[in-house]
Length: 75
Image 1 (cartoon, rainbow, N blue to C red):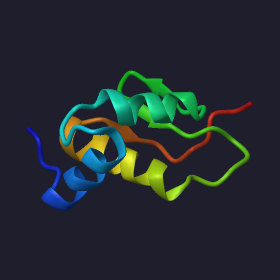
Image 2 (image 1 turned 180 degrees about the horizontal axis):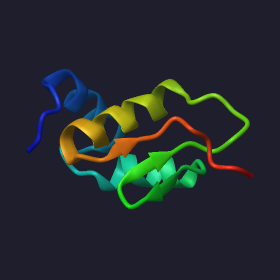
Image 3 (image 1 turned 90 degrees about the horizontal axis):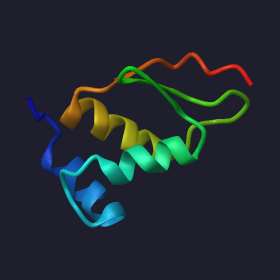
Image 4 (image 1 turned 120 degrees about the horizontal axis):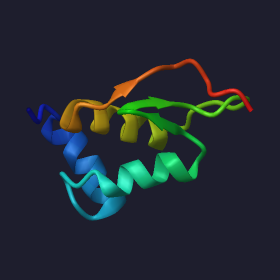
């Protein structure tokens, strides 16, 4: 069930043009090297997660029931 708050949806709308679509935030993370392991997002190894990436992670977890595992994916 969607749970993202209005502030988070507004950030996503500003970034991707739609306050509830998951395709923009998902593509941003995948293009940045994140891995989707059956709905569990994992970051790439060897770098920090940007503020925009954290926003996408929060949105996908809150609004679309993804999960996040902070353990980086090995190179």
